[in-house]
Structures are given as structure tokens and as C-alpha cells.
Image (tube, rainbow, N blue to C red; front, side, top):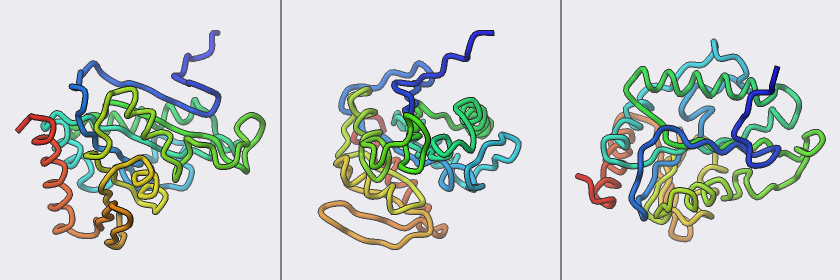
Length: 215
């Protein structure tokens, strides 16, 4: 049996374009962390049957879809480097995440995953790899691939590393799940803790559509 051809640009970097939607050059994007942001974090998730979406996340993605904004997952997956599971388990879990989102009318346009970690094994044992958040490599790669306006893009995540990656990639704003508001070097961190915060996030995503020329 032939191995499944996963979209690996290198041993520890998954880059997958999903669907056929075309976006004009200079369109801003909605970047999303995965575990703990899109799905409930189960600590190195490797079982599709255990995947549950976080409340309201599909609605946020749906706003981006309707505004003509690319939705891009950028996720660290050190569990692969540590030998807890492999790319096949990642593919199954990620497929389940995407299926659950589609079931709620939301779709993703690109997925990037970095498996490198200093505590890893073999070729994945790389400390501070440029693609691993808080480094901005995955966002920069997506920006180059899709011709994005990174400055006008935003990122949603549940860890400070997500916000730092956004800032270092040149984004101007990020939304931190259960976080605190902050402004550093031109990058605004906004909290997502309650319904009021969620309303602000939806408005910010919808505003990206005006930037891209779609009402």
C-alpha cells in the first residue's frame, strides 16, 4: 500500500490549500489557532471522535466566508515531534474539525501546521523553528502564498504565542480567548471572554470585507 500523500513542504511543516476559492491580491485574512480556539483543547488531540467545536467559532468563520475573507488555520503540533502521534492522526483530527465546521456552514481555505519542537525526535527536533509560533513563519508563508495584506489581517488564538506571531507577522490586531486587552508596538490584543467581546470580534471580521472591497 502506498503512503498517503500528505501536503508536507518539509518533514515538520504541513501546508494545505483547501477548496478552490480565489481571493484578490491584497485581501486581508482571518488567522485562527486550532486547538483551544476552534476546537476544545483535549491536550495533544489525536482522536477525531473526541473533537468538539468551541461555541460560536463557526459563526465567526462564517462571517469571514460571507465577507470574502480567507480563513487560515495556523497550528503548532509538537505532539508529532514528541512522538505522541503522527501526521496520519493529525490528518484525521483536522479532517474532523473541518467537517464539523462545514456542518455549521463555515469553511476554511488553508491549513498550516508546524510539528517542530526542541523536545522532538529525529528531524523534527529543532528548537525555535521559524514556522513554530510565536515565530511568524506560518503566517508569512500563507501571506506569500495567497498574496495577503497581512497588516489588515487579524488573528484569533488562546495563547500569547498566537498574539506574538501575529504581531511579528505585521498584523495590527489579535483576539485572545479568555485573555486581557493590551497594546504593544502597534499591535492591539483584544479579549474574547463574553458575548460583548464576541460581538466586537464579529464586527472586526466583517470590517475586513470592506477592506477587501466586498460589503
